[in-house]
Image (tube, rainbow, N blue to C red; front, side):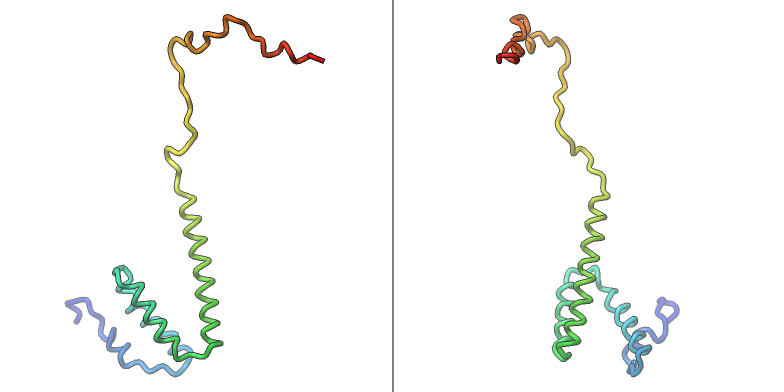
Length: 126
């Protein structure tokens, strides 16, 4: 077992585990999470978690389901905020206003300057 890097009692402990106290249920949850999170990078993982949660929750009371729903909703909101902050911290390269850069002889741009500036003639009309 040591040669292959497998700890004795890893999955065997999970199989033979029968929790009765709160501490034992916490340990059981940790063991399950460790085992399940080994597969979190797989494509099928979200569908698996969805089915797992559905099958577990079907046998629970509605008050317990409501409490779990609130916990999941709070986790969802926190995760959204974290992703939004992470997204806003990324630098926006190349995103800015386009600016016109004029170089060289600009005589053709100012061809009407020879006629004078008559914009202010009517300012004091009355």
